[in-house]
Image (cartoon, rainbow, N blue to C red; front, side, top):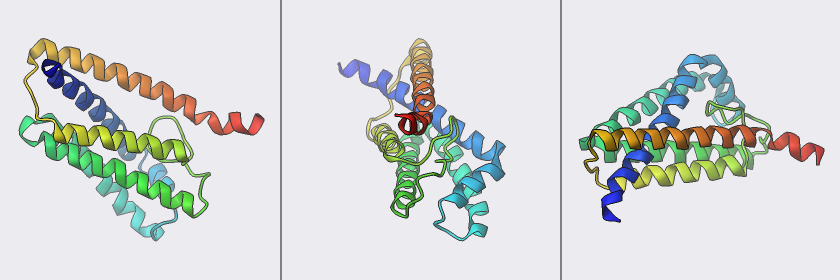
Length: 175
């Protein structure tokens, strides 16, 4: 069982890198849209959202870079966990202020902020903490390819789950 830990860790790392890469790409490619999502949270003055979105994009890219390097992988996991948890806190605050019709702004399928997005972020933060806590092990070239393939598979399943979740508000309205 101990022998599988490095492979599981590499798989989860690949998955989280993909989640963060998509989020960073979305923030960079659809910058003004992301700023609009951030302004929808209504938690900071509108003018602050522009530099905040840029800083979050940079932090996501830094987390990706840190998770790639064995010597800094734990720091990358901690940064990723902080990002996921921080986003969750912001979503919780938005919900507390009655803003449940805003998009989470995470990239991927549009999803309104909800208990589901809070739970998703809690799971992502826990996975990232696992990356920080588990020492990086050696998996070899074949192990790296298998872990990458498994990470891609989890990312695909994650994308399908997000797409299904994006339809929940419509399903609830018709039920």
